Image 1 (cartoon, rainbow, N blue to C red):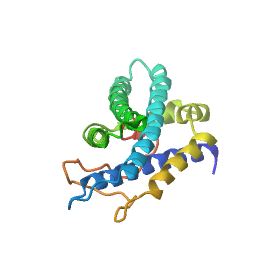
Image 2: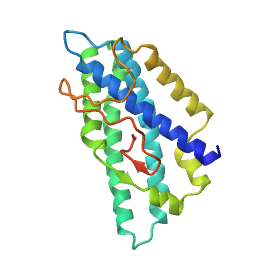
Image 3: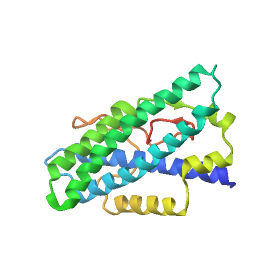
Image 4: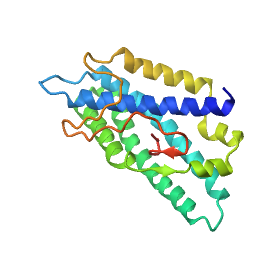
Length: 212
């Protein structure tokens, strides 16, 4: 496996894990029969999402910054794609910021589980309504303008990021409630929109600024 293949594989793993966490979190929130969501599990999910969405947002910002100056003036479609990605990226940052504030408030000792759970529901709903419905097909731009140096810069894949992603995902796995799994699913329950599939797009076929 060469360096580019390694980078692409790690990006794919992170996107797949993110989709699995979203799906399991939505399933926990949608449970009926009076089963209260496990706050420890929900917080592990939220903290994973904060980390990985922050990475996805940074990756997409780097893609915008690297690609836009390289586009020909006549490449109207490419410029429109990058501009749309920038808009989605701004919305993603705003949405994940609201979840971050709820997690921080809960961690500060307020233990306001209802506000935290509502913020988590809102983020999952935002992702399903806004990010998962957008497709930014920029693979052809990568093929045209990216070398290994650009991939290194945009992906920010290193030993520290790999280790932290594994640790945060392991925390989710470690407190997964009985009856739930970290497998992809389409969940249309309890007012939550269906989660996006956990099949990760290849770099360049990004489902959302994560984004995603």
